[in-house]
Length: 354
Image (cartoon, rainbow, N blue to C red; front, side, top):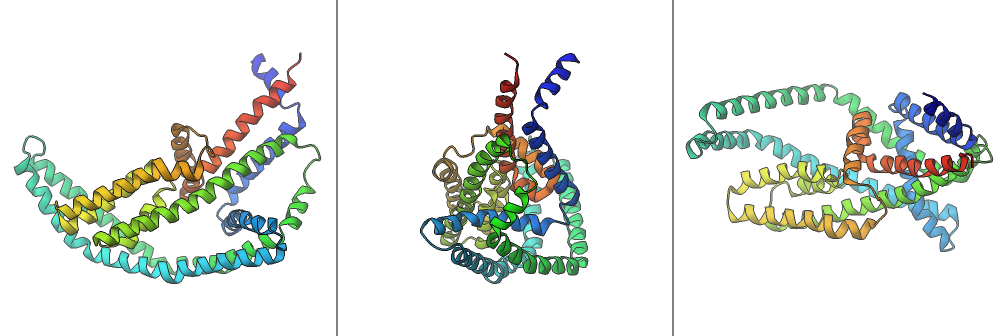
């Protein structure tokens, strides 16, 4: 007990450590308690933070900030418009077609399952096949009920999306335009001596900014290459599947494994065990291998120096706390924790008596 008391007194006798702890505690408390209410503000702040990098690049080339902000924000609005009015309708149409094809896919899958006891009686019995079929039917029925409940509450979802579409672009613009004013306002509440917090912020800012921007380009490249490959082989729902493959890179290790199942299943139900199925599967595996062994080192290098175990733990922890957004920002948040742990002992060692 004395050891813990001495460590606590020695560590928190430094006002900088107290300040850093207070900032982190308040920040996490706000996100946990008011995250749903402030979601548009938090999302807009993150988007503005990412776009700030482009604004700074234009400013370094001699462009006034108001012009740089206007150009970057216009590009963001154009990108958002293309996603909403070009990509989303296409994805919606392919999702509808896939749902319409589900009964025939399920019937084909049942026929395959019923033939397994005849082909591999030592592995799968008829009773096991029937149990698998009944489980699949129950899961499909539960998913159908979920879809029905979602359709009942779709009006609320549409209204929420409309609010986001109106508020978020406006918030992003003001975050970019009035960045200096906002930072000065926050700085008025900060103590003058905050070297530890500044040290943590510089490391987190460098790593997170490079990581998220690199992840954006990784999603675009993987999506485009996958779309070209799937379209070349004539795979159904190529746009939908390629978008899923592109988004899967957000969750390292887990995403690629999960998205493999819909790709393989769609290819199987379209062609069966044929040459086309093999070629599409091989092309998909080659894309995943190139992404992990060529594209990721090229885009990121040593930007995020985290062990795979730490990444998986971060995905589980932050995903459990904040759902999709926790998974999306799991690695940046893990980088924040890593930066704090790296800075904390150095301060503690400076406070130890000689």
